[in-house]
Amino acid sequence: MSNPADSIDPVVTRFAPSPTGFLHIGGARTALFNWLFAKHHQEYGAGGKFMLRIEDTDRARSTPEATEAIFAGLKWLGLDWDGEAISQFSRVARHAEVAHQMLERGTAYKCFATKDEIDAFRAEAKAAGRPPLFQSPWRDADPSTHQKDAEYTLRLKAPREGKVTVEDLVQGTVTWDAATLDDLILLRSDGTPTYMLAVVVDDHDMGVTHVIRGDDHLTNAARQTLIYQAMDWPVPAFAHIPLIHGPDGAKLSKRHGALGVEAYRDMGYLPQAMLNYLARLGWSHGDDEFFTVDQAVEWFSLDQVGKSAARFDFAKLENLNGQHIRATSNQALVAALFDYCASQQTELPSEDRKALLTRAMPRLKERVKTFPELLDISYYIITERPLNFDEKAAKSLDEQARELLARLTVRLQNATEWTVVSLEEIIRAFAEEEQLKLGRVAQPLRAALTGRAVSPGVFDVMATLGRDECLARIADVTAEG
Image (cartoon, rainbow, N blue to C red; front, side, top):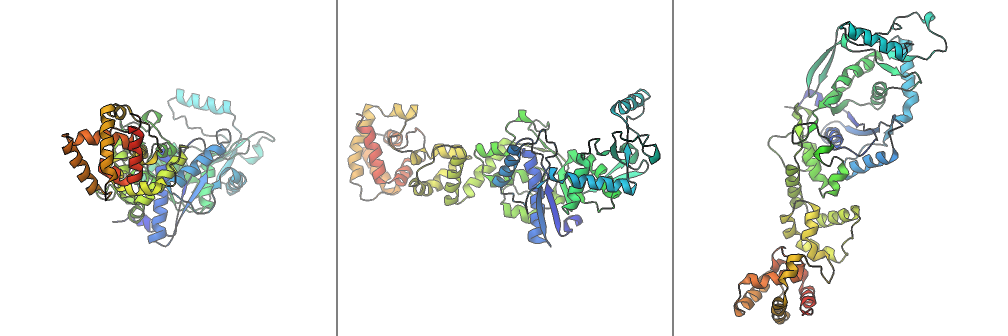
């Protein structure tokens, strides 16, 4: 059963990160939920838009590099937004305009209280056992008593009686006593807007219908609701999603490991696997664990978002990534592997290796869960002659083994077919004639062909590399004797 609020059309959601660092994995999950909700209504409703706003009013901490990191993270995940990204800082004049409109409407007032006076008020309230909520003496003051040329802030004239209620689409009905909410500052004494005001003005002007964000913003919803009401603006639907916790149940932090989206890209995860995993952190569709992005768009609904915090589990992410690797077409996986190498500024495989990789991919992708693992197991295809041998491979290529491979070369040169079946027949027959177990032949052969002691099946390796490359690699080894 879908949530009635899901049917509001057209739907407009937004993601509004602060550009003070990388795109945090929790932020990426918030962006995903907003994107899925908008895309669902775009595909299955009367319309949906997902917008991006960069909340860069904190000029001391906001950097262009962080903004670009956010763009890059969203693009890697495939979370495209509608229109141009909006800079909150560019709208400062509009924020101030609305604050002064509230002053004219009587829903805001000038407060001339100094910091020392506010601190003294709170200290006295605390000593008397009262809540330290500042109650400005200027709230209902006659304008004729205003201090000329003195600095002032603009404060919201919040109700002091009754209740403030938010019908949250995830948390349910949440109510606050109005007496516990202060007359929050709208404009600072230097005329700059506060976060609370800027967010409301921007969301209103952008036509945002659903504010989907972390539940650490739940109290903000009460204060922001009062600003909407003070301007007689429609209040958007709120949906506060649970935070992501680490495996130990504590709020996800740096000590739990890599937190930036780019870190997961660098660790070799597929973006579609990340989206699948992030979607499952706090949202569910029955017992489905593995699903595509298109399926997530089709299924997503806010009534399937839980209230409890989700735990990040690297093992589950890795397992899911392996499933997505196996589900990806061979050509697409090779292209993604090349992109991964480029992103890591590692040497790209030569173009002529693409066909070999594509041919080998059905067997390779069954054995790996990340791109570094795929690169490692693909070493024998990607590398150019002469090979570098790992310690175990080098040890297996002693003089006796090289002599054995030299004798085997004659049989391989005379092979009429170069297939897995025919190669296995040839090598098994050779091992019997040499009175050796198959492994005694296969192991040095594997080392000569791959440079590794462990690889996919040696007959698969040979079929993938082809006759000429195999004979050349064996010759590199036997020539050393």
